[in-house]
Length: 146
Image (cartoon, rainbow, N blue to C red; front, side):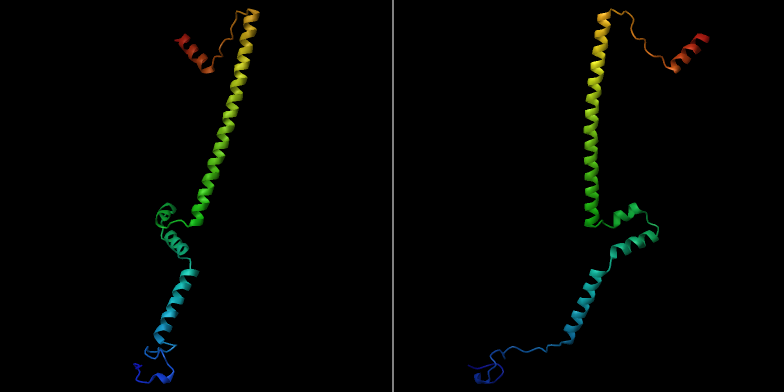
């Protein structure tokens, strides 16, 4: 079978129809070097912190910096966890307040029922007078003077 290199089939190189490239191609070496340098910079440099420090040094407020520089996933998770913990704490406080209100209602209703039953059983005609505030007394005195 004829081959492209012009040799016969007895030479022992079946893939000689394809051109061979040298193992150390200068263009390939430069390409690998720049790829390595780019990946090294991307992996090791913290461009986010550099940008934040630059913006702070130029006088930009933290609120505006948060608009320009997005938060990392770790920071977002921490904020989410903090807000969740805060919400749970608020829910616990609400439940505690509900229990305290129920206890106060029970206490108030029981004492008023007991007071009413004592008043009705003893036929006490006097009612408890409402407490007058000092401001009310002062207003009454001023009205009386004028």
